[in-house]
Image 1 (cartoon, rainbow, N blue to C red):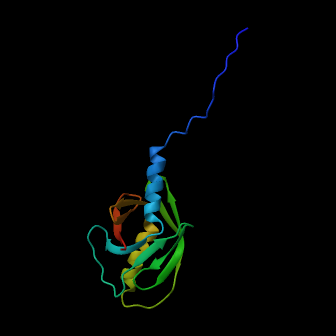
Image 2 (image 1 turned 90 degrees about the vertical axis):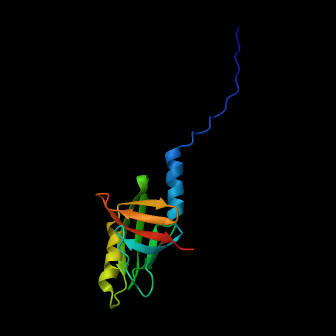
Length: 137
């Protein structure tokens, strides 16, 4: 008669580098205030009060486009996918309403994002740069 005995343990799950990176990217975007920097690659707009936005850990977004306050939902996905949804805003009349709308359009047209140090860049589905934001101090 032959008896075999062995100690068993469950092997640790391998660390998925892609998931770790995605989690790091998400945490870098969420619960941060992002101040408007520029449209496209080099167009700076002047506002009395700088546009900004902040994404909450619950997927909510709120901010200011240079004229109106806005709010809605954001979905962050794999490969730095981002989608602003169910956006709504106040309806104030401002002298720079056109530029404020361009800021809002940058958000609603965003398809992907990239974080480069303290900057957040949004890209369209065709990989065109929509604009950039800088992390608030």
